[in-house]
Amino acid sequence: MNVLIINSGSSSIKYQVIDMTTETVLAVGLVERIGEGVGRLKNTVRPETDAHETVLEQPIADHRQGMELAIGLLTDPAQGVLRDGAAIGAVGHRVVHGGEDFSGSMRITPQVIEALERNIPLAPLHNPANLDGIRVAMEIFPDLPQVAVFDTAFHQTMPPRAFLYAIPYELYEQDRVRRYGFHGTSHRFVAGECAGLLGRPLAECNLITVHLGNGCSMTAIENGRSIDTTLGMTPLEGLVMGTRSGDVDPALHLFLKQNKGMELEAIDDLLNKESGLKGLCGMNDMRDIHRAAEAGDRRAALALEVQTYRNRKYLGAYMAVLGRVDAIVFTAGIGENDAVVRAESLRGLEHLGVVLDAGRNTERSREARCISSAESRVRVFVIPTNEELAIGRETATVVTGKEQ
Ligand code: ADP
Image 1 (cartoon, rainbow, N blue to C red):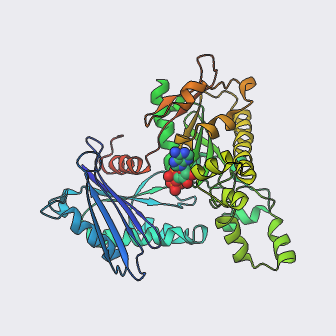
Image 2 (tube, rainbow, N blue to C red):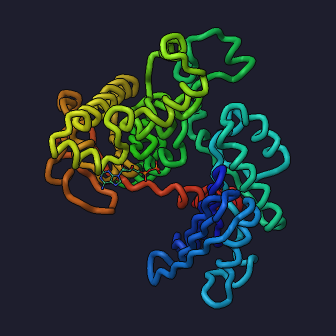
Image 3 (tube, rainbow, N blue to C red):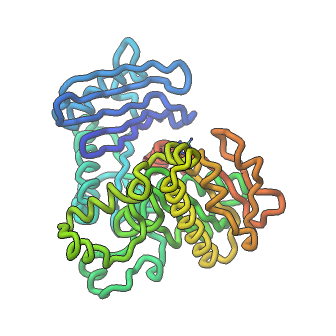
């Protein structure tokens, strides 16, 4: 079955078509600047073999027009990978916030849409954009099964002691204020791959998965289930990210208001867009930060140190929570590529049974691999994440009822 995977943002749509029988990517595309002056659509067919790229630049009024342009290219008789729309068997949608309503992927029904609308206050930027993508796909493919795959679902197994904030309980009961966690599709995917490498069922694995990209999060996984994670009610808490602060004292809001005259919205912007690595050193791409640090930029070195120290602190916390840890898994842009960040994040954890193999850690490869030394009690892996493939697998599982 070919699955169309859609990740719909406020002014963009990312998509892929994957043949789930062979797990081959047939096409990948990005529609950008929807509703702005000139929009842009880039579609690449067969990216893994004889890639053929098409770029369109024209006004793209809304998500519907963007999706129709993309479908036009995918079904183009000359070079499209699908002869007609019917060659797609199902559509899988990435949905950021499923709140407490969803602990797994769901076939989209009017009730599911209602629940997504109910959860808009928890993700006011993301859920409306995801809903736009769902509505457009349902209009274009009214007869195809559509599946929602939630960033939050994997973390719904967290116990109350991990998901509750120590604030008046009524805020949880009435307004659902709690930790939800995000990046769940990625954590679940690399955990599954890791179980395969360890040669046992995921349900018997205790893991710490470390997703370090622009957004960063860490998850403690006990017997295959998420029991704690660093992102919170929104994707701002926890680790130091590209432009997001991660943990700060919540009283910082009041301080900034009283001493800098900032409004709440400006403070939210500061913490989400101007903080993290960027706030500390002016750069948020880790490659630039390394170059600057090597050239003697002290703030770049400090940003690296603050980020890896925070990683180490949470690794220690999750090792304490889990007791037995079979493996630590690094993934996403930084986690997969940055040997220095990995080594610094694990520095000094030898007494807890984590010993890196320096040679394996610095080897460059796109493959999943073990980077700990033979005597390490806790194995350490680098495992590339693939959220689109994970959404494709989930969608196929929901539609066929068979685990992929
Ligand atoms: P997103 O969270 O947007 O999906 P990615 O997982 O693609 O992000 O990660 C993007 C980040 O990964 C970049 O901002 C950059 O800091 C980092 N990155 C990518 N390649 C490398 C590399 N070779 N070395 C170090 N960091 C890298």
